[in-house]
Amino acid sequence: MFSPVATHDPTAVANAVSAAYLTLIPAGDRQFVPRAFDGAKECFTGHYADYQAIDARYHDFEHTLQGTLCFARLLQGRHQAGGQPPLSERILQLGLLAILLHDSGYLKKREDIQGTGAKYTLTHVQRSTEFAAARLAAAGYQPADIRAVQNMIRCTGVDAAVNRIEFQDAMEKVVGQALGTADLLGQMAAADYVEKLPVLYAEFEEAARHAPNRAHSLGLFTSAADLMRKTPEFWEKYVARRLNHDFDGIHRFLNQPFPDGPNDYFQRIEVNMQRLRQQLAGANA
Image (cartoon, rainbow, N blue to C red; front, side):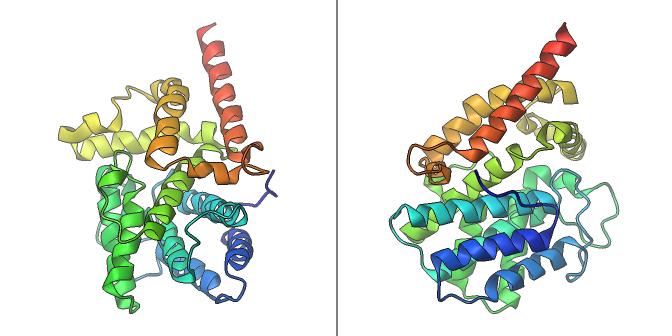
């Protein structure tokens, strides 16, 4: 099992990610991860340009930190297992920027005072690619690097056709698949995932109010209870297929030991699914 990390604490997550980063790139830039985390924290706490602090209650900054920690662990596991192609420092850095900014599309401008960032649920992936492009261009990143970050972020779209994303090379695709995997596993393995499902439903509900013509895209949940009832099936039928097919089973690099050891994230998700099933059984008793 992985050592516990307090995912509400950006410094704790940054330290864990830095350790993983230096396992992959021992002679790498030791200041890159702290800088990247400081930049992400700036964005999500209302200290960047004319953006407010994140006010989406499910897709908050901790959600991003959960995914980022899982992402770093997955790529560390891949490196230790000798996964090919090996990742360069450049692509690893771009991947970290991508996971840290993958939900920046929930951020609102200061003059945007109606509702929360959850209203952008249906457009947040595109908005995240645009936010990332503007921020990275301002920081001097080259167009090819910005495109790589955008392609990786696109892997997190719930209906993204990964095989249609025009990756620039094999490393970029691998890191995009790792990012999409970590986004799913990081949140679903969280200790408070079950308790936060009603909050996720509230985000869907707000998004549907702001885009009624696309409400069907949110899964047609009728209530928070309905979302909770359908979540085990979502895990078994949607997430499992996406992990194994769209992301080529890259989650196996989280197995300890690789390749056939237990997967800590899967085990924690199964605990959450069992809690849900027990709650549902009790409600129907």
